[in-house]
Image 1: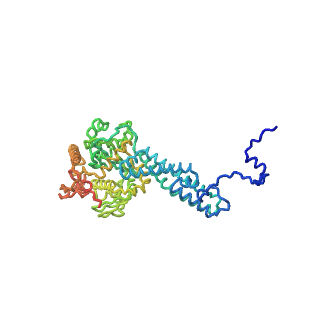
Image 2: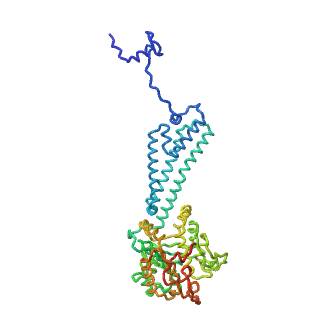
Image 3: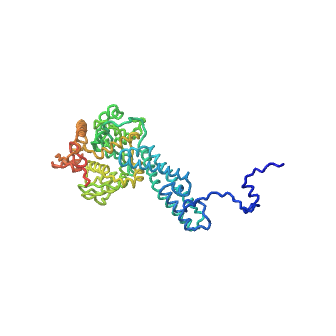
Length: 534
């Protein structure tokens, strides 16, 4: 006797009636049916598209999925049922959106914190690489969203239309991110190439003294002469600043007692008529053995000379090549300065040779481009060194107060490239976040200037004790000055424009206001009143 048939009744029925008709008893055999599937809408259907589907509908589907993936990454995947990938992409997008919102809040509430991050190479590297990664990932999401619509079923013309639209959407999201990466790269390159990473103090002193030098290196000059010498003494707590200007033709400049130069020149830099303040830089460059282990002997020597002359510590220096000055001005969008007397463009070239005067910068409120600002700062015709010093000081103030943020942003890569080749300094990189805080305070604080020119001092045989006394008094006055300083009216025995060293002329005594850029005074004056920008 055989084993009993244990197969399910359904299988037995199918064996008896494979066509699903009536069985031997004449009754219909009902086969189990799978539950009915709800219909899906046009966007939630799988990516496979029937070959007879309307190509226009397929194109609309492709473009719609690409568009929603652009506006809200991950949404296109969710619409076609790719829930796992869609949710992952959407969560990443929300995190990116939250990070962008946080940066926006920081920018609105604390510009200082944002600027401090902008001088940290690690933060800039993260921004640079992060922007590139986000741009690539976002474009891949847009392209994959378009493919979920089934573009393979499109004819060549519609496929090209879809391709152009998808590439345009990718460009819309990628271009701003690529520019962000390039700006971050330019800023990081500027920070790492200009600012050193050396040992030293990790916090700023209460008073920071920075030496600002303008060098004349160029294709038509051999070596560097520092024709512009200014010391900015900044109270790091309040931002109040006093600028001290020294003439390039100052003689017998002293050095600190413990320096190698003081041993060689115990009576000051007195090796002849060529031993002026602006020649110290090249002397040190040609005698590097006096400065073992120093990266820039020229700048170090000038720092020592200015420190001994003014009687204050010089913390750091910034050297700007004046020949490339016009590039920086152009990148900033130009400067606006009220010109008191016409300044010739030409006459005497920077190397001292005679050249034709091509035109004049006329008196009045003038918008100067880089070329004009350079000649305004350096023109030697019809003026002396002291008038040039005053004009250079006014251009420096204009750059500080008039830098247009949009022009800086628009030309930043050019500006960064120029700065890397035109600016050198020994300011350590780790102090930059603190310097940002000081710079923001100094921008809105009172800036006074004391210019050591005749008749206040003699350039041939200067009274260095008088200079140091004036410096100490100016610093003390700045520390106790009110928030705003009234524009003073000062009587002086003469105008420096006609009383330069060796000129052999005397100016008639007259009253001058602080708004006369070439005027010599025996006390510091408000830089904003000396240099008028409106």
